[in-house]
Structure formats: structure tokens, C-alpha cells
Length: 356
Image (tube, rainbow, N blue to C red; front, side, top):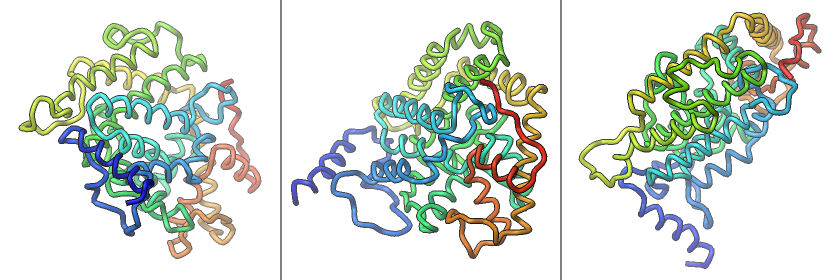
């Protein structure tokens, strides 16, 4: 074995020290297309790097999180959200002696398929497509088929499973939108880290935009989670680690672990999330902005559905039906690209710049 080949062997040996419940790269279910292993990286580290270097990841810096086309420098984008999720996921995975590399790879890929204009764009595509649209499924499609000119990134099964099962249901912060649990504890970590990140930074953005005033949080949320951004994140992450401690394997292996929260913290997190739905995501004063964003997506979809030959992109599969190609094209757009494309095609309404 060469010196370089010893690097991966040493990294894999470290994985043997992880919890008995951790996913190990050398035990992965593998890739759709077998490949020679990297001499310097484990399989999950290789997936992480492929995601960071792909086109869809770069475009996240110009995709909206909540506020549409904001002009201020400090509003959260899909890229900064993704980095926050990865940081929180790694912290939890490290504390529970699980596989940080797998958690990070899933986190970095979980929003690659999100369309422009945040959830407004997702709702518009969901209404237009015959099979509906979920950004988690689109993220999986990006890494399996659309990147690399239709070859995809050829990621491991564990990373792809975590990506497609990363969405949460509206009814509870621990609920799965698609009804499927991630197969690995690392995937479960990412799904919760996603929620921890967005309920906190969306709150901060709403205050920055003047939509919410400081001190207007429900009393239960402030009392249980904390009054500041850092206090709330520390409370949530600490509770997840403590409530999920069986995942370390230090308490034995008789009980199958699940990543979760204590009832009191879960209730407070759900209260904060519902507060954001009522006061930010579904806020009546944002209705015009949201409808204009959805109008742009609908216009582009209808236009290109009638003229698919006008699409100039390598981010689609030529053999797919027109509706699928159009959806892939629009889902890959950034906010500003979608606005410019619609305006260039004669769309009348223009979204005003969002909050500064």
C-alpha cells in the first residue's frame, strides 16, 4: 500500500471508533455506478466535495430563503442557510459520536433542487406539474441525473437517502413531509438541523426587515428557548444531543435510537415555527409579493412549455417530456435570473426589490 493509500485507510479506521449506530463509509450501500475509491478521502467525504463543486451548489447564493429578491447584504440565502445547517448538523453528529462527514454531505445537498423565490416558487411549480413538485425530490434529481450533463454526481446511497428525506411536515417539527424517515441517524440529524437553522435565521430576517419587532415572540418561546438568537440555537442543539444520547451507544445497544427533542423543547420549537407561519411565511401583507413571485414562475412555465426548443441549458434531459424539462430549467434558476428571463419575454408584472 502506497503512502497516499494509507490516508483513506487511516480515516476509515477512525470511523471504527464511532458509535455502533453510526453509518460507516466503508459499509456504504455504494453508488449506482461503481468507482475506484479515493486514496485520500472516505466515500462520504468524496460526496461532500462533489456537492460543493457542483453548479447547483454555486447557484444557492442567489436563491431566496424567505424574503424575495432582498437588496440588503445580511439576509439569508439558500447558500448561507445550507452552511448553517451543515454546521449545526456536524455539531450534533460530533456530540453523539456519529459520522460528521455523512451529516455534512447530506446537509450541503439538501436544498440543491429548491426553485427561485423560496416556497412561493415551490408552490407555483407544485401547482403546474402533473406529478407535483417537492424540492427534496428535485434535490435528489439534481444529484442523480441533472448535474454533469445528465450523469449526476453518483453519490452514495446514504447521502441520497438523507437528501430526499430531509423535508419536514407542517404539523410538527419532527414530522416527515413525505412520510419517510431517513435511513441513517445522520440523515435524521440533518432534518432537525434544517429546522433549527431556519426558525432562527428566518426570525432574525423578519426582524431585520421590520416585519417583526424585538420582544414580540410568544412568551413560551422566549421562556423555554431563550431571548436571543444564540440562546435559542444553544438550547435546541443541547436538547437534541441530550434527548438523543442513546445514539452514542454509551447506554448500550438494546434500544434503537432516534434523533429527537424533549417534549417541552419540541413544543416551544413548534410554537416558534407556527408563529413564523402566521406572522412571516403566510403574513397577509406579503401576499402580493408572494403572488407576484408565483406569477413569474407560472408565466415562465407556460411560456417554455409551449416553446421547449427555446430553452438553452445543459441542466435537463433531452429525452424527458417537455413539462419535465421546463420544470428542471425553472427549478435551477436563481431569483434574479428568473426575473430577468420573465421580463425579457414580456412579462408585465415586476417584483419590486425586497427589504433592504
